[in-house]
Length: 127
Image 1 (spheres, rainbow, N blue to C red):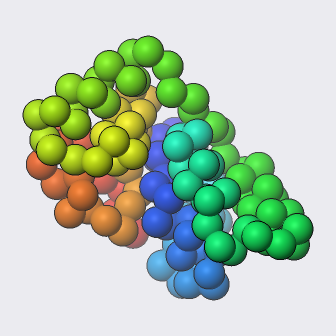
Image 2 (tube, rainbow, N blue to C red):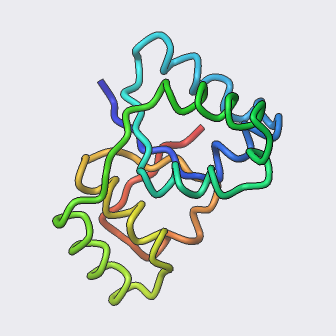
């Protein structure tokens, strides 16, 4: 089964109702055709958004997050993220996301490919 790591921007769009681009991806996840992961960094970024100020927003987010496998940052991911950040001059969150995808040998699903374009080892999931 193909593994994908989903970046925060994709889920933010989904929560805001922009579902057309990723409708097929969610369908494939539900059918167990894709093995879908998110980083705990993504979880934190989503909980920091204005969309989850209300209990209703938090409840919707919890429901969405429940369909993904969560990957915590361990020392291996942190070390590789440090290397990526230093050598590719990307932000810490993006370096952690890239490192997580690499550690899983998963393709990254993001709408912000420009943030990751210099990380040659990284592969992307296209929709």
